[in-house]
Image (cartoon, rainbow, N blue to C red; front, side, top):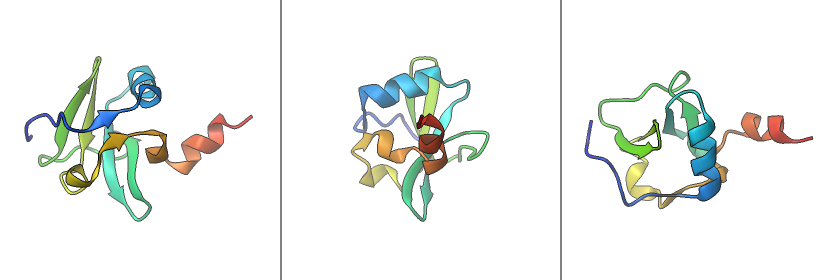
Length: 86
């Protein structure tokens, strides 16, 4: 896999979210733009960039990496957001 990508910032809210997950995550290209998924849903590719967040790894699609400045809550799939609503 390519070298770790240090130019992408992770918001504190997302860092907490990533650390709380039981699996590594991947920022993938979708028709809605970049979204973050469990690697169980979107397995990493050999071309992905890797960011370490505590004990977790975040894989970033090589296609999306040059366009992403920050990993933030906008990257959560809508179904994740709907589960959080009261």
